[in-house]
Image 1 (cartoon, rainbow, N blue to C red):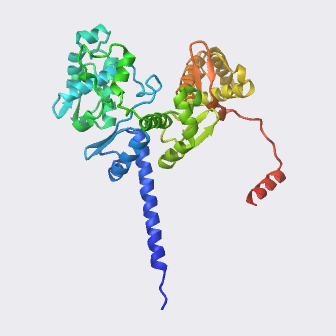
Image 2 (cartoon, rainbow, N blue to C red):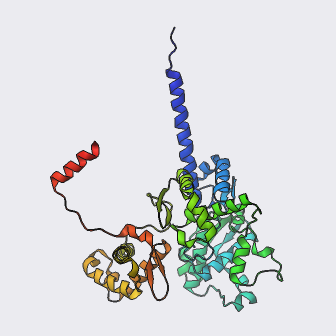
Image 3 (tube, helix red, strand yellow):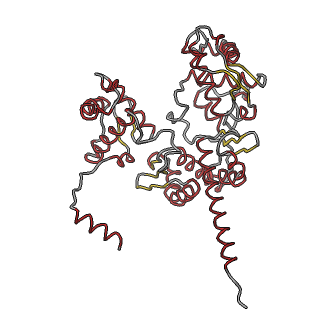
Length: 422
């Protein structure tokens, strides 16, 4: 009597599908945490993060050294930057004033009732802002102008996006434009568990005694994120792996010449294996070159700054990238250029492409602002290095250099396609 092997094959097939689904959910959870390290329960990926919590904790601890806390009230990946001197990171539209207000707002909410209004938050912020120490640093805040109210609303919307605040009633926009701030208000619930996870530091600044606290700004930054490192060969290897993985996941590209001797030696030997592990887990695509390594995302989901993109500024950025990439390709030794040269290039480009741009970008002198925006974007993407005097294209910008067109006949194309099928 024969035995039908079909049930075994079906069981294996079902098992393979389940493993594939688990792996895809794990990948999506990693990607979501990389983009939203502080995640509220209302986030679309939160349930996947909860289901994959144990596996995610192990992966982040092994590859990056970032702790991950997952609870019913939310999830927090304590991402800490590999390069504290990198000023390209940060919240969009934030300056020193708004960052100070964000910190003060968190201090107010820590002591607040479970609900708070926008107006009351502003009043308590003004009380904290009157501290003589803050005043000695030139910090001022009141609600007398629309610009100051706009700063407060920007902070509230940041906290809303993190889930720290949840809007119950009202609207912030009317508060900005009201002649009397009491005429328009909003009411929020305060989510304390998420509020407690706002600071990603290893050691909070309030834990320092006044006489022991570091004085210099850089020393203060490093003291907040300094991690314990085991004094062993394995501990040093782990620290190197974590540092490089953090850069590969956070930065557009890692250049070998940006690493010190110890990091360069480890990176040279391990970058293939590291790229493979990170790519498998995140779905990023590794691009290895002699100058370094990049993990790219074809979907664009893991980038807060996409290129190419839509809009006048994005088009101008792409044109400047092509211009600089062509200079780098044709004259590698003399690729250095100035912002004036880029501005002149965009002035000429406006005659050819200006009909695609918004009207204000075609006005005389608009190329100055376009050049500044384009160069800032390219710097944040790791495609150029710049100082007040010159701009230096970096190797990764070569992907935007257009080669000479190749004209092929129909018969040549047909032959090529046929050959590709063999």
